[in-house]
Length: 590
Image (cartoon, rainbow, N blue to C red; front, top):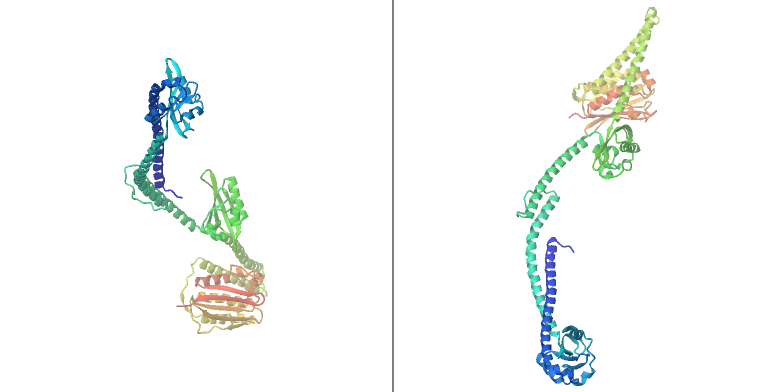
């Protein structure tokens, strides 16, 4: 059962009143009983003294001689009168017949008799077997001429005392019930006055707990409740200010952490995850809510990162390492773990993971680029230098060889020119310095002119070119010259890497808002392992054959950049010894 404060306080009031009434009733009952018995004792003593004066000769008579006189006196006083000799023999009793006196037991050892014989008076309360009720006995000695003849004893039943006590108790109960009702009414009124502001204070505290932060004071009293309400309102204002500050800081921190490209992980002193920012969630393919509170190794399943955390927790110093994760793509991460002290002397870890995969890839590409450019420049330069030295050493005067040497020098110089032009074009494209003049362009017209220019090359390689481009195809939004450069590279490669008597098929179709052009050949094809890198600078599948055919290794990279500058895409599908299919998708002109 749920007891409210008001109920508890009301019951407390009633309990105090009840205990007070009970204690008062017990005290007054005992005091009233004592007063009644004292009053009876005095009355019985007086009756005993009067009886002693009238019955003194009876102690020298035989048993029962004064029986009628004793009974008459008992009727007048309303008490029981007993005459007892000094040896304890009952010689007269107002409640007995004369014939029954001889059979009464000796009363010498009765307490009141002993007290009267020894001290001059005696009293006792006990149950009377003769009358079968509680009796109050009072005894006085009967002395004549200095001789102790016996004891005169008077007695009264306590029935009247008990009746009066019972009546008093009933009256006390009625008064107590009335007092309890009155006390209940007073308690309810008093408790209501106390509980009403307390309920308001409770409601105020609950509203603060729910984050409502009321500004008004609900209890306007000069007592402690009013002061407490005022304090709660002031506390509410301070809490609201602090909560707003914390929310602002949390929002700012969350915004900063969410905007960070770097992954951030917070770990407590036991190595359990406290926080992951969105970048870390994306990197490890987990949800911050799911892994919060779980050990690092169990949540992220990366033993090297877990070792970095353990090392930082043990050494209490910054640890910086590079690690590799697979999720499922491979990522190279620069990890910096920083120990951070927080409450109660505990130290957690703040981990920052910077994805340097692209940086390492760019570094590798740069190294390969430098190596490739160096090689591509060195080879023709070496040839030019060698033939030039040969000519200077006398071969210039040799008519049978000088023109051959000069032709070779010219070919290598031309190759260098192509390489430099491609490098300059690629640099301009990547630096976004290339200028484009976009217009509505007919792809069949562009391809037709390219095919005319490449016809001798195709004829020399016995390559058949099938142009399936319909003049009715929709136009695309493009730079005509740049678009021509794209298809020159694709068709030139299709011719170079085709088989004798091979076939090149050029087709196109409109798909949605794009025109998809396909350049398919029946050549040597590209291995599946090389397909992901085919559009990289200087990447060659068959390096020896590429150089033999004068390729720079930059053509497909230039194609990719130019197509993307047109907001299009380029892709390739290929099977070794069965040919390749390059697909270019370009947006249609509006």
